[in-house]
Length: 149
Image 1 (spheres, one colour):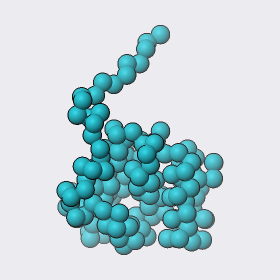
Image 2: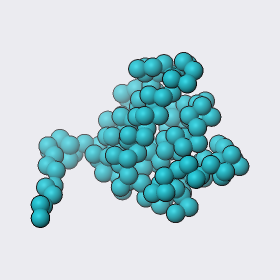
Image 3: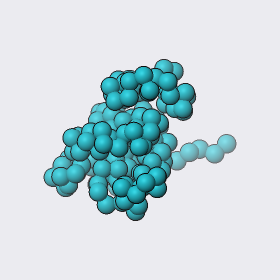
């Protein structure tokens, strides 16, 4: 009945390269910074949020991900990586709650960019990070995002 209008973007967005925009902007937003942060806080973030963070990371790296989705992912991962938070990470329990909320929001905003390859890469990394603990908890992951479906 109603036709969905295709979103129009400014010419600047059409030419925008998210990866290039991040380069040199912050020494915090690097592959290594993400890996360090996830390595340090993975157990506190939990299986689900760690996996979703990896989904975002690998979706950002994928050439199939749209520029719009890469912007969303860059914002979410930037918030996770950068040391400035609404609630500092060192505060027990609450410190990572805001990070988790941002990651959850971003995953569901860019879900169409999370393909089987992205899921497989995140799954492999989770197996390295958590081992058998991860395998026992995959039922906590949304079935649309689960690597085994």
